Amino acid sequence: MLLEADLPDDPDALRAMVIAAHREIAKREVTLAEHEERIAGLETAGARAEAEIARLNAIIAAFQRHRFGARSEQLDEDQLQLAFEELDAALSGVMASLDAVKKDSGTPAPRKSNRGSLPAHLERIEQVVDLEDKACACCGGDLHIIGEDVAERLDVVPATFRVLVTRRPRYGCRACEAAPVQAPAPARIVDAGLPTEALIAQVLVSKYADHLPLYRQAQIYARQGVLLDRSTLSDWVGRAAWWLTPLRDHLLADLKRSGKLFADETTAPVLDPGRGRTKTGQLWAYACDDRPWGGSDPPAVAYCYAPDRKAERPIEHLAGFKGTLQVDGYGGYGALARRGEVALAFCWAHVRRRFYELAAAGASPVASDVLARIARLYALETDVRGQSPDQRRAARQDPHPQHRVYPYLLSKLAIERPNHVWCADVTYIPMRRGFLYLVAIMDWATRKVLAWRLSNTMDAGFCVAALEEALARFGKPEIFDTDQGSQFTSYAFTSVLRDAEVRISMDGRGRWMDNVFIERLWRSLKYECVYLHAFETGSELRAGLGRWITYYNTQRPHSGLAGRTPVEAYRRMGQSDHGGHAPHDLMIKQAA
Image 1 (spheres, helix red, strand yellow):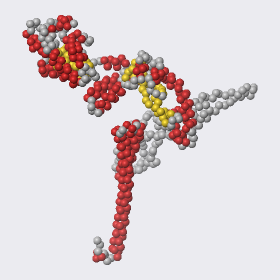
Image 2 (cartoon, helix red, strand yellow):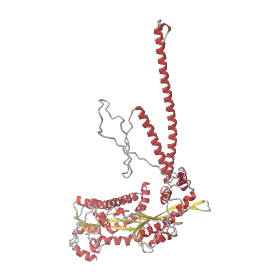
Image 3 (cartoon, helix red, strand yellow):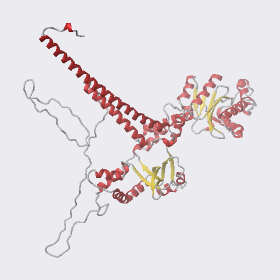
Image 4 (cartoon, rainbow, N blue to C red):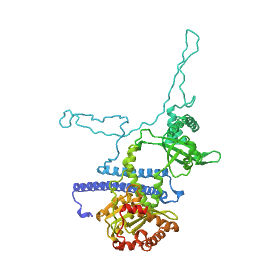
């Protein structure tokens, strides 16, 4: 604080002090005004931010209704896309404000590099932004071009109307009184009407491709001074549909000459005059596109409207078609197939959808396994997409590189002791509702079942588990024989045998007699156990099979084993009075 004693006695010095004080006060007032302006800006930004937060919360709430709400409250896809547009616009507004702040502060905004390139077919209109003075500011010499920066921006020329004036001169003859002549008037979609074919095409594309109702199109045209009533536009649409009907019929007839088609149907709201509301119609689509499979024909699709979804509709639409029809699970196509001229091929996407829903809920490991199998099929189809039918068929039928087929080693082999040869097979076990798969590992010489497993899939895992159990409990055989099933040719199964130094034998394709004893096991098992009980659940089946296999191994005598049970023969085979078994070919002959 300045005291009176501190004031100078010199008037000039006092005047200078007062002037300096005024300057300081003015400077502080400017600073205060700047702070107040900044505070006001922050308050405005805060208000805008609160409003933006409220709007984004509303969008998030809409997303939550779409994902988690009741079916009646969920948004359709179009409404969901509108919400995304709002969210993107809001984010862009925030980014623009941040860019402006960075620009004011001198911080360069990050450059966006994921915009792609503009199509090459678009017209390029160049404008050169050049220096007015091309003299060097340093020495005054002439400047010369050493490079340039080129930037492309997307521009638009708004649609404009024009009037197409058609003049047809009339000619008369001065030498005679013949009737005047003139060129015939070109055909019009609307006789004596205003629109050209291009304008009608624009109306149709806007209505059906861009989903722009006719009343909105009328409003757009009115902004340019062209007044068209909605009823006039409707008349144009109806006349254009009449002219296009033969083209649609020809397209559908051309599609029906193809050997395969895709068919699907969807609901469509239709005006119901007199009732003040809409009714539900059906729009059927028939398409063909061979481009992903190496075909040369152009893709095509034809649409047919029907008031309902009766089975007669596809029969009527596809009259004369003979070939394969790819469809979803709608039962109405079955009537078409029963006529004998159409074979149905069902859609993998529809099959996969239900399994995906079960797997996503986490309640079904079977569904997850099915999805994994379908994924492998999809991966194969991805590799062969675009190739010819013969190439795709060959790729589908070629065995996997890791699925090796081994030669048959049991021909004329004398199998005389336990653990000389083991064999395995998989069979189908029906239940009251559904079915399971059963694999069994058997000792060839004694018919003893060494291990078995049930599974609800044909994956190799349950076969590998049975094999590992048999090896752990009974040692290893010299030879292991199976058929050429994918479970037994898989790397997971054969690698276990190779690691145990077991020789691998595989039956000839279709040669069930090469593994006759395990085939006879299946017959006995099904007729003495499975068919008699019709098990309800997998646990009941597992318990029932366990009891029967124990009985088979320990209590049921075999004539081929001198009246012994498989367990007795497995323990005493080397000391039996018949001295072993006959050669393999003789054993098959006796079994037959």
